[in-house]
Length: 164
Image (cartoon, rainbow, N blue to C red):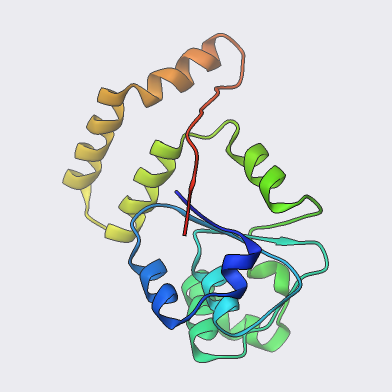
């Protein structure tokens, strides 16, 4: 998993955006303030886009428009007329980036999230999905979640996300 904090998002350049688009692991981006240009593009191309309350996302460059199309698909034309920001992002929060990330990751498996992101990006079909699920079962990830469910507790995963 790769986490783009607000500082990394604001400082992103064309090379880093291209690198972001080539990643197979889950990408989570957290933006704040005014987000335009390549920062908006990186936010929109992330698998999970979070902004702090009061942030504004401007789709003002071709790369950001491509990110909007990637997120919205056929709904992009309708969005371009209304431009409701909440349709572009996954979550708005009042929390700071690090505490938000810790809470968001507390009951999620990084291994499972990365596997899902890779499958979605790869569009590899049934045989690739079967192989990936076999790998996850061999690692014991589903059993951890099932055990927690049966014990009526939330699962706890302790992997640290990688920063870009």
